[in-house]
Amino acid sequence: MKGTDISSKNFEVDYMFRLFSGDEKIEGILTEIYGVFAVSYPIICELFKGVSLSSNPEKGEKEIEKFLENVRILESGPRAAKIFGKFHERYPDQSDFVLMVTSVCIAEYA
Image (cartoon, rainbow, N blue to C red):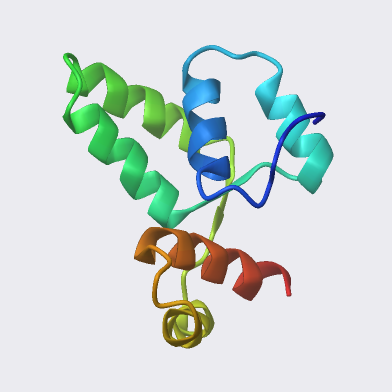
C-alpha cells in the first residue's frame, strides 16, 4: 500500500484499528501484501485490552471473536520465545510489545 511503512512500530496495531473502524479496503490490502490475513497473540491481547476500556466491552468482545473466526492466528511457541529473548538482548530500548510481535512473525515465516 502506497505510503505504508511496514517497519513502523505500530503497523499491525494501526491496521487492526482501521479494520475495526470499518475500513473495508484494509483486509484486501493485508491479504494482498501477505497472501493470508493473520494476526499474532500480542495483537489479540491489545484488541481485548482496548475493548475492556470501551463504553461497550461486551459488543467489542463479540466483534473481536467474530473477527478471529476468519483469520489465521500465528502461534507463539518456544521458537518465538527464544527469538524474543535474543531480540530483547540485542534491542534493549525497543518495547517488549514490538519485539514480541516481531518474534512471532519471524518464528512463523523465517
